[in-house]
View: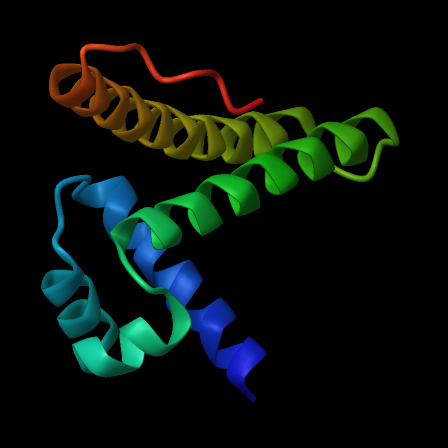
Length: 115
């Protein structure tokens, strides 16, 4: 049950963050109709939630491209889904860059690439 519930939270949070990238965890929880405590059962903090969204977006993008190559999806539908996925990837990249700038301002060093 927890996995299904986590997936529902992830889907709802993804949609909200597409519409409002600056939404707080309290806003996310309220928009989903759950309490912050419930949200924190699934994701420790915003960083973990955004990382899960980014991972899901990248998985979805790979699946969309594969399905297009295999003829399982039409071009228009694939492009629409790809555009939504890229919005999420850009959101996640912006968050990562912001975190890197904060680390650099605190330590005076550029954080190493994690990939």
